[in-house]
Every structure is written in C-alpha cells, then in structure tokens.
Image (cartoon, rainbow, N blue to C red; front, top):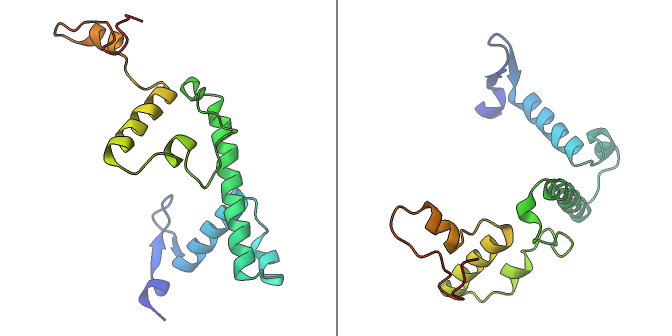
Length: 146
C-alpha cells in the first residue's frame, strides 16, 4: 500500500480527530453524487453501469446541475438580460464566441461584444464623467452623447 492511503488527515473542525484519506474521499464522492442527483453509491455497487453509460450519465447530470444553477442566477443579474439562456447550450460555447473566426482581432471584438451584452462595457459618456482629464462625452463612432 502506498503511504498516501495510510496517512491520516486532521479534521478541520476539531484538532484532535483524524480521518483516513480513504474515508474523506468517500465522503467527498458521496457529496458530489448527492449534489448531482445521481444514483446512490450502494445502488451503483449493486448494479454497476458500463463505462460509457456512466460517463454519459455523469455528463448529463453535471450539465443539468449547472443549467439549473445558471438559470437561477440569471434571474438575479440584470446585466444578463441580453444573454438569452434559451439559446445557450451547456457544454458548448455561446453563439457569439462559437461563430467567431480564430484571429486575434476577432477574438478582441468578441470580448467587446460580450461586454456589451452583459452590460459591463463602459460607454464614452460614462468615461467622460469619471475621467480627471478633459474627455468629450460624445461617442466617437456615432457622434451622439447618449
């Protein structure tokens, strides 16, 4: 047996208790399985799935978990109102990034486009308000101050 499996790790809450690495990893795996709503470890041991079935099941559960979590967060962030969550497919990039050419200039444009979509892009009028030097509040592209 390796020395890693025999070593004991202190439990963070109490300095006098120790837990084996194997026990800790089993607790961690159980926590992940519960979080992703996968079958219990006992059920998996009684009826083990094949590797391809397990990988597909795990990937689907992970995508479902992050989809639910992201959709819950979308409601709380007003800056995400232009990022349509129904268009997004989890496990693949956003359509703005997906169809962009892979040149450096296009990647920079995609970053600016995503900033505009999320509302984190600072407009010229706002830059003029917070700049200590004299800056014109008009947009350099359309020559308007809004």
